[in-house]
Length: 395
Image (cartoon, rainbow, N blue to C red; front, side):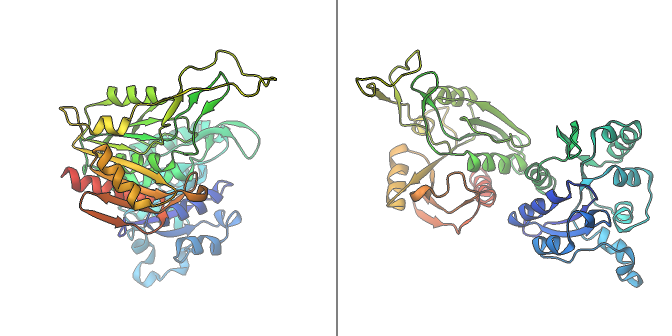
């Protein structure tokens, strides 16, 4: 994405604050952002904040451009994609009817690039007949919409009208920018998150995995056109766009879901699967008593990664495992690579609680013949790099 450029139009609405986070996420994904801030948008976010995050000048005044060179035309065609977030009812109406009385609306009328809008407005405004007509016109004109979502509005009302999350808009932008056929027709299986092994009806044996890295990898592969099956343990994360998600809790359920998802050309096992489970869960909630804590006998869980990597007709062409270690990272990861029989191990150091639940990661890519140390970056960027390695491996 290092050459990709987005022209971001920020409309006037309380959701404009989300445009700041969207800009940060796009820059973290190495997408250049050139902002246009409407006069109404500047009532909610400052040009300085937007410029600092975009690392580019904020435009707002149509007549501040060099119009001897038709600056508004040049600007409207300077990016690979035009994004409107938030797309207010006013901006949608102007775009649908061809009005052009400021820089934002002129840009939308003059551009020859794809347009993505993220609507945000009061529920009654969203449901108004005029907005519905404008929406239908924009879609017929080829504008892509993401959202709005249902939720509580700033005005206190509830319903459709909330702007989609910055992460969802980021994913839609990357999907629009990425070559859509790089992994077209390829089925890739991914596991993510923790497993939860029941001890009694309210207690489980689990771990600190958030699922963020696995979900980011699923999103990155889907953006490249892959058919992705994401088998996830219990996490609170939205399903990436274009991904088929299967929710599980225990290691046995995850194993069954993975076997049911085969055949696949690649399997990427990011999930932190519990090594052990209680041999039998108590039927009622355990209580404290005079005899002290109850005895819980643990038995070993199935090795999902080794099972997928085992030789046979259903083995994916590429099997990737993850190793979360607290010491001797490379040595433990290389031993795991040999023990599991997989093709790569992506290893990270989680000593002191680092990485798990965070947005950044620093990994080693271990293959039979090499160790590649990647610099610390966002989990989205790690996912992007892994996705492109997968493309190379399956080519």
